[in-house]
Amino acid sequence: MRFGLSDGFEGNAQTFRILTELEVLGPGEHGLNLTAATRAAVLKYPWACFHYPDPHPIEWPIPPRGAGHARGTAGAAKFSAYIIDLPQMLDALAAFPQLPPGRQTLECSVMDLADDIAYSLHDLDDFHRSGVLQFSPVSGEFRSWESGRGDFADLDDSDLVRAHRQPGAGLERLRRRLKRREGWIFDEDIFATAVRTVGDEFVDGVLATPYDGSMAADGAISGFTSRWIDHLISSVSPNPDPAVRSGYVSMDSRAWHEVSVLKFVNQYFILDRPDLAMFQRGQEQTVEHLVLAFEDWLSDRIDAGRAPRRLLDLVNAASSAYQAVAKEHPEWLGGNVSDAELARMGRGRGIIDFVSSLTDAQTVAFGARVSGASGMLWSSSL
Image (cartoon, rainbow, N blue to C red):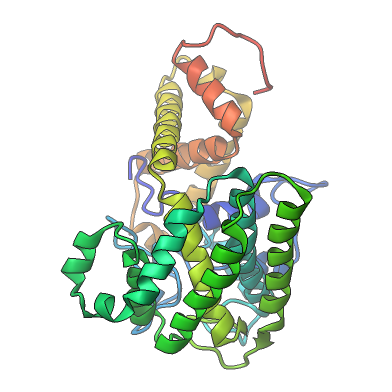
């Protein structure tokens, strides 16, 4: 909210903005000139943070996946277009007049499923090869939940919170979360079978042998990944009348539960690691420092013109877009907005567009330069 941007930053919305506005290919001035079907295929969460569609998905009795409230705001946690890109979203979805509001297209459902399969298998493959995933804690989690399934089920929520990282507690929290949110498909017995299957085939079948780069180790993890890709793909079928939290193509119940358990392994034993969290918090501070430095620079009326050329171009493009929205759809911005507020929004969105386009190395280098910590004058192009 520093720049008055109610929809802040969202990765899916930024992807849509890159494809439709920021990247240029050919003679056009904006975007990649993709077909409506291609643009709609990346609308994993086909709504804005606020306003569209009406009623907004966060108000639905059963919200679609990703439409829950974002932490600290009244808008959706995930969405696929910023306010200034909402006309592009509406244009893409206009090619599908019979598509219900808030529903993915068929092509997008296929993309979403492919993303789930890749996340649940290839990331585990990579982390096993890197030696990050360790057999003992993962095995302890699975075997403790299986052997103490009834005892875990008897715990009230506060006891489960206090259990924290006790072996088995993570899977029990997953079971309760799926039961609460995904009642359209969740099944207790199928979940237990999925835990046992993943435990047998991945934990005991792959993790039990540390990866040492040998042909045997490569064969074990590659064979598991290949078999499971075939298994999950074969479980997919069209669904002409899907549940609100599903799509026009979906995995069967068994595969859905297995993917949920595989994704849990990635989240619980990789993404929740303290060392990774520390690294990510450091990255977050680096990015925040860079954003604030650019804001300070662009607020300097004397020196703003010497800022990186692409940054200035992005700020100008975003400012023009906000002015157009204020003229054509002021309700999207919450009513009448002053010129100063529009300029602030445009500056903020342009800075976000610029910083989010940088590589990790560029972000660190730019951060060092604007803070005076780098003695290098020339490096990559601005």
